[in-house]
Image: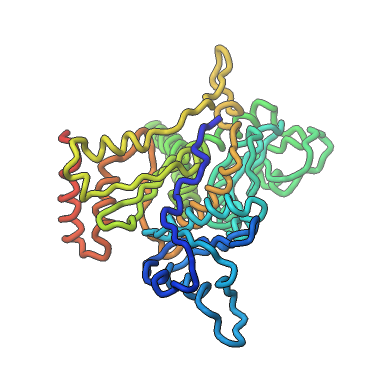
Length: 416
């Protein structure tokens, strides 16, 4: 189970009462900046009106100024009582704020309002006696292995087809009965499947192949590539050049299958990253942590103020990026290697996990994409995060200027 901050993290921190008789003063006080705008109604129990906009003042004027004669455009002048809004420094912050407030105000239909579609994932159903790998948009705590997210179902299908060609697990959807009289499928005829359907392999052999698939996905192909490289070197040292050539061709096939894999897809439990965006205030960076696929509470680093702080930015980031408590340590077999059903299965999937993955997927694969993302491996790459902050604080600057900005940011790093 993963403990996650589930409240609204990006509050509507600005509020103004709306009085039609004082409309000019009202509109003059609303900034011309990007953000999200919520208009509250005078009728008890009425739903508010929530929008995202590139100009909060212009959106308020469009909805609250006297309508033009004969216009069919939505106008809330007669029913609005108050506006609340939040200025945002990036499209990602705007999207996240809109999601949080839509979920709070429209709990039954916020997914439709935001067109929030679940992300495409690869799943290995580990509860099946003979697991297979397939594309899905359903995510649940069913003990399955989930890998992703991908830009689309087509992208997930394309990667899985080339990746599964490297292994011999089944791709059929039939129920395995291990019937020797069964004719099998084209994959078994092509020697691309171990054919458990007609008892072409033992249960242990199939489990071993599934374990290789899981390890390959879990390491983004690194484990498979390393194994083949080691076997090729051993074959070369043994002067078995025919086998070494065959392994070299397999290595080329592995590289081709992994070449198009984006940086984002990985085992969902291992999706720990940080998204960096410019904040609303000058010289401010918004830090959006992702822990096991779930967006945590964002932080805002004001570098103008941090220069006078006694603590380094790295110390502040270590505190902010501290992961939530997890209780998902996999069980192991006594006296044996860890079972891959326990090692890789997803056993905790909060409701917001699929939704947060959808938000991150929409941002990551957008073109052009604003901001930067850095992934946590053994630890957070704090120095790379600081350098990325320097680049974001000087958008559009030439490489030399970015380097100078990076040097200025380095003063916040502790001495090594």
